[in-house]
Image 1 (cartoon, rainbow, N blue to C red):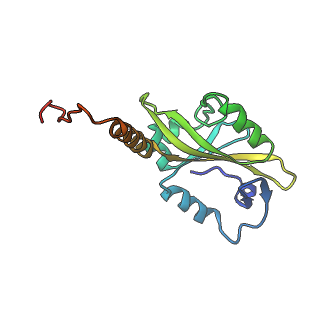
Image 2: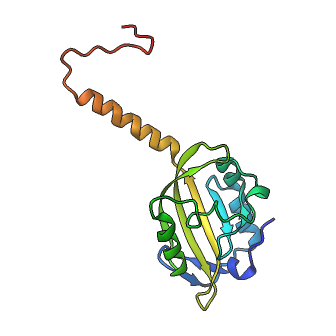
Image 3: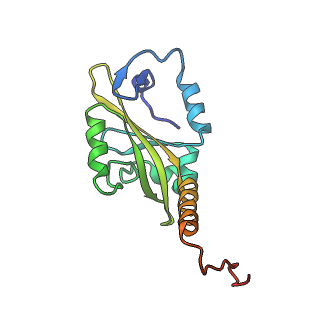
Length: 173
């Protein structure tokens, strides 16, 4: 069940700042359905970063069931799970009414790490007061692994080939 306030549903996010506006007739039911079927992990948190809602993709990617994630702030970027200053940058953007986007490495419930493209955006009322935080996460682990593999492959074949022998993993020709 989604606990998003009616005011938050009628808000419109822009890529730069948090603004209010008409929702174009989209009701909470339509938005709920979009969130439920989205392949991206989505979380909604209160202004202190405590999770109020996660979609099924969040559960699949993170390994946390909704019941385990609800009320926790450590699972929200900017509230204790980021690295190398990302938490401060995310909080600064959110509390100034701006959207933050970037790549972060995250940790699943089972301890395995994965990379994701993250967008964190504030939902504000007409006066600019922060109501909720929307987090959208797209798992990039496969893409990054492919890029790293391609880099290793190119690095290997960019070396001089004099005296090189290519074998199978079993050390066969």
